[in-house]
Amino acid sequence: MEGGPSARIREGDCAVLKRDEVFKAVSVLRRRKITFEKQWFYLDNAIGHIYGTTFEVTSGGNLQPKQEVEETTTETKEAGTDNRNIVDDGKSQKLTHDDIKALKDKGIKGQEIVQQLIENSTTFRDKTEFAQDKYIKKKKKKYEAVITIVKPSTRILSTMYYAREPGKINHLRYDTLAQMLTLGNIHAGNKMIVMETCSGLVLGAVMERMGGYGSIIQMYPGGGPVRAATSCFGFPKPFFDNLHEFPLSKVQSLLSGTFTTETLHADPEENALGEEESNGLTEEKQTSLQETEEEPAPEAAMEINPTEEQDAMDVNAEDGEFKENKEKENKENVREKQIKQWERRKKLQVAAALLREKNADGLIVASKFHPTPLLLSLLEFVAPSRPFVVYCQYKEPLLDCYTKLRERGGVINLKLSETWLRNYQVLPDRSHPKLTMSGGGGYLLSGITVVLDKGKSDSSNSEALKMEEPSSKRCKLQDVPC
Image (tube, rainbow, N blue to C red):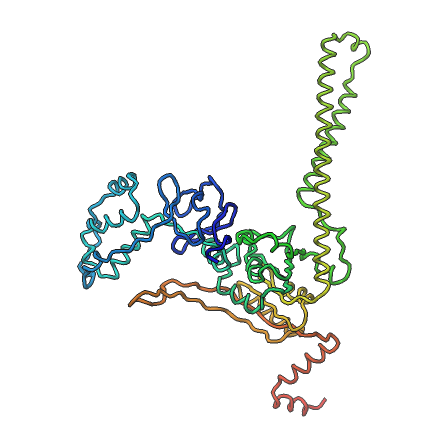
């Protein structure tokens, strides 16, 4: 795949910039200034290179592929036994800030600046080998303007969102998202229902796992679906052919059989257009009324000069042309809005037809709303013996959902779980857990649907409760006289 055309950076692609453990999603466009980690540059020279290439920012904001240079270990051979005699008083470095700035102005690369900092440090050779490596790494991060351009994926984008904007994805950690995809049995050819308010990250992860095969129905609250993170994946257009959307406000009407697209609300733009049209009509009426009121008397009209009459005729002709052009534009806008609304209704009907079949292969819920009403209503569209997964940042809503599902029946293998993640530093002779770790990645409620016999559900629930009672308690209850 590395040699294929899809692995190369092209203009218009969605790419991710990487520097150490910091990520940023951008669109690859020519002559567009990008600011990342206190560095600004252009992506023009990156077009045509393979994803994963590391670039160095040169003068003028241009990117140049970094040449792999073997690091010499001559400086690090001389090392101290410990750091007890090293005092951080700020006097160990001979180079001043002005000297470093002068080196930058001359165009000297960051690698050479780091080498000069090492040579002008009076305490570098007294440090231990580990401390020297740490010093070099710290200076490289500060002075070397190195950026890697990688292809977006679920792992990279989920890591980026969790580090930069966790609130937009409901604090969904990347390992929890991986658990959701596994428990939901996401694969090509599935018919999935996805309800999420994570900026489209969960939807994009499902689309990536399915690879453009199968169908996805996205349930959304409000006026329309949010797919900010989905657009960062850079999926080709065929991926969106089998992506459908359906509003949550229409679920109950669909289940009751009263669903219709006639009550579909117009877009906010359409409402604004209607208001503009009405305002325009009222203005025209007002102007016409003012014209009729301000018509001069016949005697006064006879006294008007011919030049004034000609000017008035020219103004009226210009006003007439302006009104005609405005009416044409309004008609064209109305026609475009009508076509868009018709297409939207058609898509809505297709999504409703898919839901009416009630044979979805899985359900994924990751939203900021309470999961119980969502899950109980959306499970009606899932076929028996299919998995479902619900994510919530907190445990208590999922406990309530767990209880309601046990009372309702129709599900088996219910599990409420929390994943625990800890990062490790893996280096020679100093591998250990990192000092900082995530406090929590949310909770998952998973299970499998089965056929729900509504007639026997009440009796089965009561029998199950009786079976759960201890035998001694049942005997005592039977011995008590009525």
